[in-house]
Length: 140
Image (cartoon, rainbow, N blue to C red):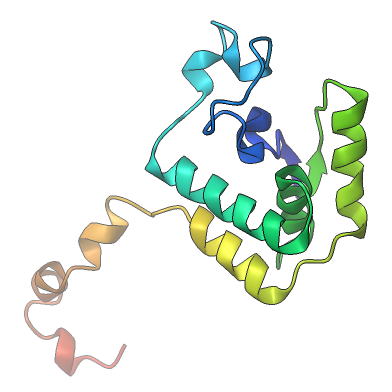
């Protein structure tokens, strides 16, 4: 798998959540502000990326890119660094090995909820209706 914008336009580096992004940063332009999601899920993923980065003594970008490359289904990141120092920082992910616990934590933090109708059909009441009250008698 190949990932376009593996750092989510710089969001996974934490600079937008922390308010440290430069005025000319990609997601600060008027056109891009509508794409920059700032919700609880994003903050949770960024916080976990930053936590892992601190543990391994690397930048959040390196931790995020290493995580993508070390997943059960590896992801080939297409980096979009705008400056040479960012590009060098991104490349340093190649010699970073996260442990399985760190990868698992990042996977869990970024897990996408299935939403409707999946969560609806997982409710006991709905299962009872779907199976006519006989679900507990059916070997599934």
